[in-house]
Length: 313
Image (cartoon, rainbow, N blue to C red):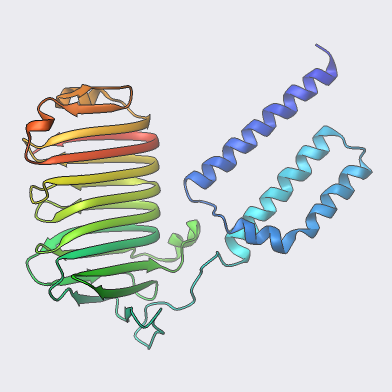
């Protein structure tokens, strides 16, 4: 094999490896699109890279090495050197915090409750970089919460016949978890409210006990973690979407509920068959009497590497 052809293959191989590593870093939320801001700040480095390549005559190894170093510097700067887009400087403290708008009420304690008043429908949004999440029910008319102090902004807004509640973790850097011991988010939701839950996080260990809750929509996006969900019987239709990287997902479904599973990713489907789901297409599995059941649970899962366990209770 000619030396030039060998070098071309080596260069292509290293390039593919590099692209794959960068993709995984994005997938697991280790790096974020704050790198775009880094490019704006560090664009003069492009001139440095071009100059080095001119000096060394465009040698493939030098070209590859300089571009790898350039991208690594962007990643480092995007992660530690600047603020991500939309970064807010106000944390939850016991001091006054500026409300995000006149429609939102901002809470200033790491523990407390939010009165849902006469709301029939509620939207719960968790935007976290990392954390242990527990969601359970309460028979009161208040959302009770316990969250890490000085780290998360809590806000709510009452709207027509409903309420929106947000938990926004201000420090979403992947390595920030090392600075905090207690990263527990314990939330208790009123059973009388119909809920839509949206969780967006990098790394998560979640236990969602929805058995007594009326949850119609559940959307989880995460990089990696362990997720345990127990569905209930209060909602006749449940739509669940889970988009994760390296994650183990356990789904506990009430007996007699119709289940339709639509998934893509590297998981073992044997558990679906043993549960009693029938294969409809390459990606869709459905319980035998799905159309006849009073409770129908639609589950869409897109996972990179992980395991999906389906249990009946």
